[in-house]
Length: 484
Image (cartoon, rainbow, N blue to C red):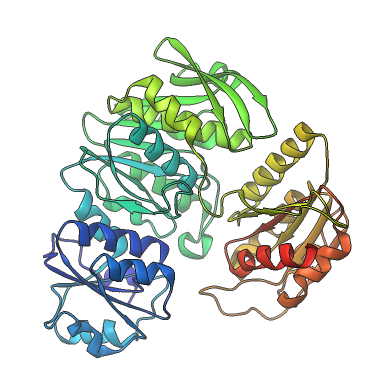
């Protein structure tokens, strides 16, 4: 039985919701919204974390460890059970017990669709940049006094949260394409940042991956809008196909990209861009007028994300100047070029450690390019990257592309593969990437040695990046300790 055929997709009773893996980045946010709306929330997770403690404080009852008895944490059986089919095995005892009791089992995406029902749905999709763009949209709309509800795959640095039950009419969320779950939603505004083949372990073919974005666009309501990045050829092509089907489409991008796609109306154009050591000074043309934003996150890709956020907020009635002020105040998302610390003195004085979630070649290249822009603007240091590949299937598929992206750095450490949900593949490890890198590179299969190897190659004022979707984030603090 496949995951997609083993779920309920009809309207369900949310009176008592039990969430398996409640401490996860996506699940915990929805649990918080449910609790805020007065629903009874129970759940289980593998270990106690700060997120679990916060959920308990919000009123959720959370058990550590997975047992069938957890279904009765609220004193009676739940009306629905929520799970992630990517992370939770089908023989999970709570999942098995739910089926034995005839309790509906739904995915996180189904629950999100239920929570968004009746609101203006602002959904951010694309191969890369979903979390950052969603976060920027939320912060911009908050600054405009719109108080949207939101669910984000990461925590806003300033707010320290990944979800909120707002008082406004809009609900802002990421639309995840990795398992086609974005097809559960009915967007008012759908943003597609870019499209590049990924998650081929699920889709099998590139054509199937591309098709899911067309299907997503077709779910836009009669008065809704598709917003596409014109700097991405595949997103622009999606926009053209969607417009031909009679759906309203607006583009955003640099002046060159806007000029290259006259068949699509530009909602926002980046008319000027100047890199600074703190980020970028940007001017956007929107609704016939220019607005300036001092963006405190480096990289041209972040400028484009900000353009999408500005346009999405404006489409729902947000004041342009207030939206822009929110983007200026945007302080980032945890694990998206997140500054983890700077060495104040000694052998490595001025070295800075950043951490980033990038785990696809295009993301890796964009983050390293942003790092390069930063050190160039500051006039000091090199770019040193410690990269942990994520998934055996993705490593095999994109080994050459990863190597080319990593070769944009000055020094490279390639860690072993973080398999996540996948089993090891014989003969496949981080060396298949490291062997193709053209800059100084070291393969570091022992995670405990990462910090000491960084210390061997680091110099004063270097910008050091830990990068990947797995456990590599823990290496950032170890590197800071080693260099200190």
